[in-house]
Amino acid sequence: MNVRRRHISAVALTAVAALGFGTLTACSSDSAAAGDTGSFDVVASFYPMAFLAERIGGEHVHVTSLTQPGQEPHDLEISARQTAQLEEADAALYLKGLQPSVDEAIGQSPIATKIDAAELTTLEEHGTEAGHDEEHGDEHAHEDEHGHDHEGGDPHIWLDPVRYAEVAEGVGKAFQKADPDHAADYRKNTAALVKDLKALDEKFRTGLANRTTDVFVTTHAAFGYLAERYGLTEEAISGLDPDTEPSGARVKELQKIAKEDGVTTVFYETLVSDKTAKTLAGDTGLRTDVLDPVEGITDHSRGEDYFQVMEANLTALRTALGAR
Image (tube, rainbow, N blue to C red):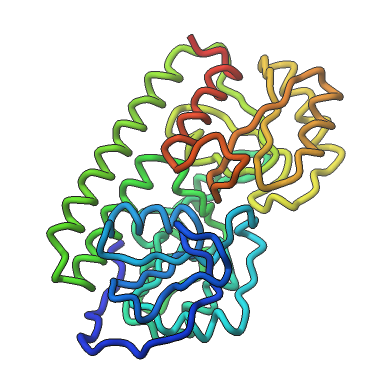
């Protein structure tokens, strides 16, 4: 579905004090952000959205991220100061359904251009234990002009390079509409990003083509779209919320699955505790490794940007699945 867009007024916005957001390139919470920057000011909800804005906007945009590096995006609470200062941005780029605090703040703000990434592709339901619900898979895929809640839809669309490319194309069109003076550059940058994402998709397709098992175990059910794209089966210890504790029955079921399906590895991620993964791995004689949902880049990430971390994920999956 195409996101609704409005033209941004040509009148310069009032100069504002430095925001309490971290920028993608400067992580200090006191760094200058949206407002009187002389650029097209974009506030992004968290890293995957900020990455799109940086790549598509290039030199014409100033991007701030509401989620600090190392902060778990699901836990983000927007401060009153951030809510007030958010109003000075030219555009907001977010993923409705992932961060309720962000959804509320952007929904109530007067920002002229609000870009919901969930409207630029389709959302499906991916469960913790039983895969995704085919019957209701597209229930939350679309929104009307008043905006429906995406609850029940898996928001982790950026982990599928094909869906992420769809979002990138929509963001590019939104930038072109909102800042027409630089539309040609936004169009060019979007095409380059989409080309890179298609190449990443091909790397995953070929890299996982010859494998000994389709099943992988993760702590957090973030990889449903990736699994679906490449014919894999994700078995998650917890649900879409990484803080959910698994039941004893679920742990026993995972032990059985690991034995029957030749699972070698229990994956954990960089922004959430690895305690549950290591406990399960220890009980089943499996090893542990990192499968990064790329929700933020930190010093512990296996790469400096989305593409590097996704390629590290591919390497980890190839090893775990016995790909040749």
